[in-house]
Length: 121
Image 1: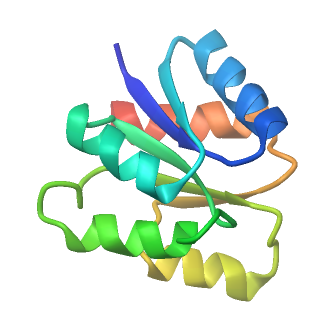
Image 2: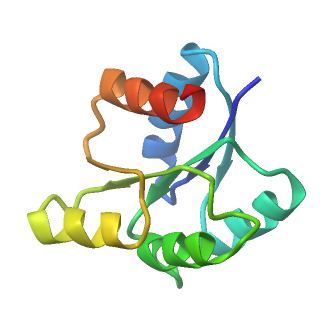
């Protein structure tokens, strides 16, 4: 089964995203920080990551860049999700290596379509 790591520090958003992905047939793991995400990735490499931009301590942009610079994790597709909806934010997210950038509130059908596209080729 395809596993998606959800990195989101807002409980409500986490529930919306994980339930949406689970309903679409994905296995999900949820964490609330970049630090937790790194631990989970080391334990069980996910097939894709749904990553919030605004996180405690290290931002989603920083984590994305770090994962893309690491040989072991650079091929994991990352979908950035943020309330930051400006063109510059989207550009910056993609420049860090994100495969896609969605703005919140998440359109669930779009999230599922993008995750399926990224994980099933």
